[in-house]
Image (cartoon, rainbow over all chains, first blue to last red):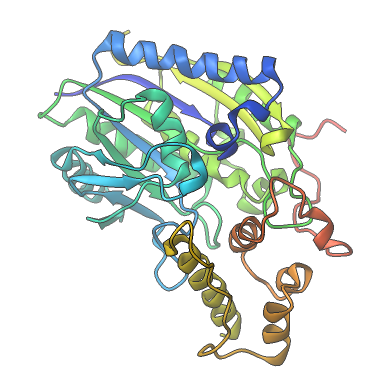
Length: 276
Length: 96
């Protein structure tokens, strides 16, 4: 059976790829240093595939059909969708058997993810994936979550889905070493009067909650309170999903930088892998 | 449901821009074929971001549209002058 040999969550601001140099040097170095550490860890642990959770940005779905959770079950996923991202557009390989297994097992566990055989990978995935494997050969199973269009899953829903997702990965017989990544957040505001703001207080509190391992206060938070940290901040649902999958494992915040040039609170947390 | 039509119009425009050749002419936003109120049509045709926001356009679509109009990062913030936000209030992580 597979082990989740590494798990982490990271912010996915488009500017981290599209205008990498615009961040103050020390902040950029700190953020990319954490991602470099994870890239090295992936090589060290011999990761065979990554399951990545990100938010929907109307790249794959729109208001005519907007599922809460979608698992990409195709052979590959073309990305990035955004040509200005400065990441070469490729067909990112996937592991359709793993993806189908995740569908089967999470539905059996009581969740209702939709499936897509033709999912594209937008900046939400590609910014983080590219830092994990710049050659873009590592198979990636994408999972998108609705993080911006009410009604939204609560953080507890996302966490519970993560628990089921973690169990599904660990029951997969086809691979031995799988990585799990959450992409999105931290605080940011888009398309509204506070665009450009970052709620540093929320970001530091959120990271401290994850590190503490006592998530009740976080998971009890209603959606109308979470949005006060920014209308894009709901993407932390992907982080909470990964935290659910890694429940009982130690969590460490590797970096936090409020990078106003990227209009985003930029953080990375790492969860201890199964082979501890 | 006309707010859906308004958003569909913007969404279709953004997709058309993505699909247009990099060196060719860029498609103009067209309101033809969408069931819109006069106010919605006016907001679209005048590219009035503040009005589109006030009418209830999804912020992710507004963000994409502003990027397509050439705005980068947060420099389109002044276009919301006078608008109210739903992101102000008391939350558990705030110390003061």
